[in-house]
Structures are given as structure tokens and as C-alpha cells.
Amino acid sequence: MPDRGKPRGRRRKLNATSYVVLGMLSYGPATSYDLKQWVANTIGNFWAFAHSQLYDEPARLVADGLVSEIVEQGGRRRRTYEILPAGRAALREWLTSPTTEQTEVRDLGVLKLFFANLCEPADLLRLARDRHESHGARADSYTEQREEIMDYADRWQVKTIELGIRYERCVEQFWADFIVELEEEQP
Image 1 (cartoon, rainbow, N blue to C red):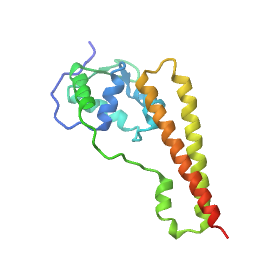
Image 2 (cartoon, one colour):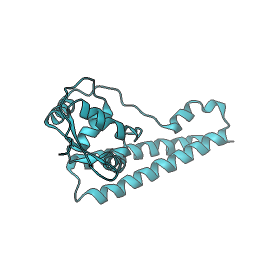
Image 3 (cartoon, rainbow, N blue to C red):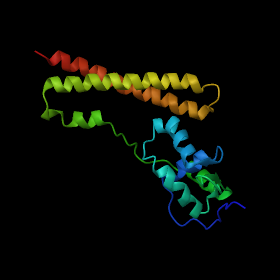
Image 4 (cartoon, rainbow, N blue to C red):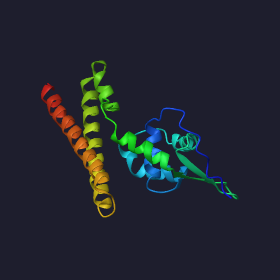
């Protein structure tokens, strides 16, 4: 009989990766590889973290009694994880808790812009053009993805990609405006 894991009671504070795993497993059982693929094609567009965490976190959630584990008896001994009622309860509790944390923006272009006083005007203009182009391309990519998922994604999944499109278009416009400003300053 496969080992389904025994609930052992939650012993640690769950983190964002914990909730990513619980949320993904709420759609159905999965291996760590499945989770990595699902995340890469969905929330990986707006929530960055090391995919190696998707291999470690399910085992922690098994130990916490939130997820069960079935180990394949032969071959690669693949592990398939499934959310337990306690995991669904923890996910619901997290979903309904207040979200007051500051939004974290990690944009290498903005970081370089902060230190731009150390480079030449031509370098800064190149940075602005590169960032303008990359944000525009990302917005275009999100727009294509939105069209691809419209027939099967739920309303809230579509809303996340719509926010991504708006964000990328807004940042693209910032860089477009900055390019004009820099070009007007040139002798």
C-alpha cells in the first residue's frame, strides 16, 4: 500500500512558497516536476522564486500534515503530492487574511537607473531604450498568453495576466517618456 503520509500537525510558519504549492495542489495531485511546469507557465510570470523550492517544499508540507505523498514503488520512485483537508484550510486561512505588505519591485533597469550618475548619457539612453523594448515585448507576450488561456482559465487567473499587461504597458510608457526627456537634453 502506498504511503499517503501521516498528518503530524503544523509546526512551522508557512511562507509564500508553501502557499504556492498548496494552491497548485488544490487543482489536483502533482509531482514536484508537475508543480515546476505549472508554476513556470502561470504564476512564474509574476512571482519569482527558485524552482528548487518546488522540490523541497512539498516534503515539508507532508511533515506539516497539510499534504499527502504517494511514492511510486518502482522505477524513479516518483513522489506525487495531494492536498489534504488541513492544507485546504490553511490555504483558505491565508487567502482570507489581510494583505498589507508593500509590493516588492525587483527591476534591474530601475536599479541601474538609480546609479546612472556613474555612467555616460549614451549608456543611460541605451538602458532606457532596452528597458522600453523589453517591457513592451513582455506586455505583448502577456497579451498573447491571455488570448491563449481565455477558453479554459478561470476569471481570476485571467485578471492576473491583465494586471501584468497593464503593469508592463505602464513601465513601457515610463521608459518611452524618459527616452524623450533624454533625447531633448542631448546637445
